[in-house]
Picture 1 (tube, helix red, strand yellow):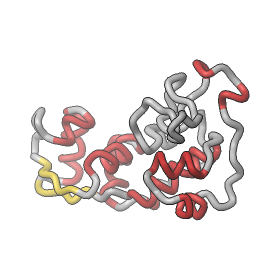
Picture 2 (picture 1 turned 120 degrees about the vertical axis):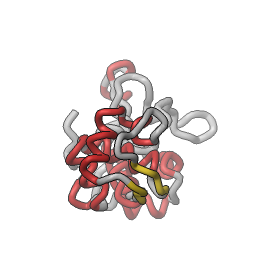
Picture 3 (picture 1 turned 30 degrees about the horizontal axis):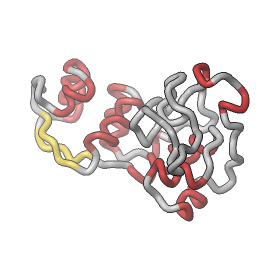
Picture 4 (picture 1 turned 90 degrees about the vertical axis):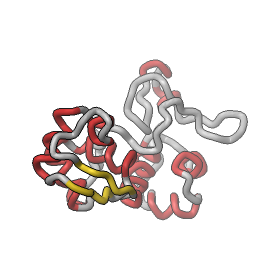
Length: 167
């Protein structure tokens, strides 16, 4: 599925832009989501215990090390941008303000600000079989539906608060 509003890579912090150039936008988002806000050591030849190797694999970690150089790396979280993108994508998928706020752990007021001007989409279960619908959070087919459970929380099994496939 092509998102009508792709994640604007130019708005990512420079380090994440470089990672996106090397490994793609999905890898940059994964690094921000999993390692953001931390300082990691990038080895000249990252081994299996290196955080980048564990997250992206050896060849990608090595390519990042070659491009950025070995040493300590402050990984930015890019949380405001990722929250903006996730909220808008979830809104287009038919999620309510409350559901998005619970999913992203933000206030409903903040979600209203983030999705201003975005019309709610049609909820997938209203238009197709659940096993054919794609999760609006991660993009994978059939494992999550934007519905509220009995406790008022959105039902998803993907475990992520941000889309895994930003473009």
